[in-house]
Length: 280
Image 1 (tube, rainbow, N blue to C red):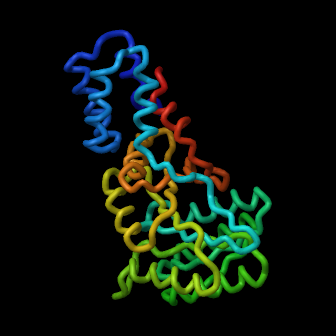
Image 2: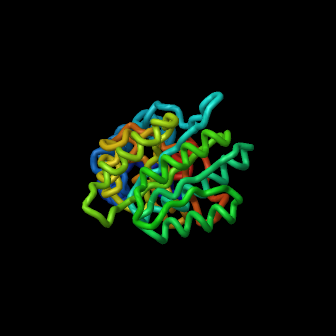
Image 3: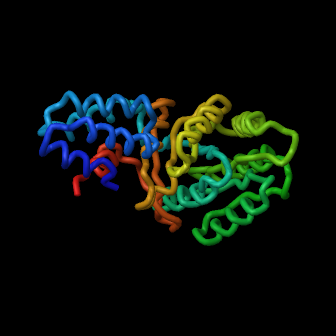
C-alpha cells in the first residue's frame, strides 16, 4: 500500500512544514483512519525526530489496537462453532467459504450452514462454494427459519464429529423480523447443541467510517470476538480496518485480499502497518 510512505520519506529529509502537515492530515482522513486518530498521528509527526518517526508511528498505532489474541479459537475435544455476521455486500458468504478452505487445509473436518435463507443467492452461492472446495453445506428452504438451519447444522456437525461448523448469517431480512433479534435467536438455538466459540464480523475495507457504525450494531447484538477485513486489494486505503479495531477493541483476525479460495490469511498487525509506512 505505502499509503503514508511518501510523507515519511519527505519528513525524514526535512522538518514538516505547515503545508506538509495539512496534506498529511488530508491523506489520513481520506484513508478512513478517523479524525481523532488522525490528529494523534499528525501531532506525533510534529513532535518526533525524523530519524525515529517510522518506529514511533508504528509503536503508537500498535498500542492503540486490541491486545486480545488474534488466532482463531479451536475447542479441545469438541466441535468449534464460528458465527459469521455482517451486512450484505461485504463479502460475507465468500469469506465463509474461504475460511472453510483455510481450516480444511490445516487438516480439519469442516461443515457449513447456509443460514442466510432470506437471500436465495447467498444459499446458492455457498452451495456452489461447498461443492468447489469439497465441504458439506447444510441448506434450508428459501425464506425459511435461519435458526432452524443453524440448529440442524450444529446437530449434524456434533453427531458426525466435525471439527468446525461455520454459519453464514443474514445481513438483511426481507421480513418484519429485526435482524439483530434474528441473530440472537440463531446464537441461542445453536448453543443448545454446542457453544459458539467465535463471532466474526466481516468488514468491507472500502466501506469508510460507516463500517464502524455497522460493527457497533452487530457487537451490541451478538458480542463480536473478531473482525475479518475484506477487499484489501491494491486499491484499498485500508485505514478503516485499524480505526474499527481501535474503536471496538475487537481484534482483526483475518484479511481477505481477493476473490480466490486461497485469498484469506491471518492478520499480522506489524506487517500491515509496515506496508502502510513503506517508503517509495
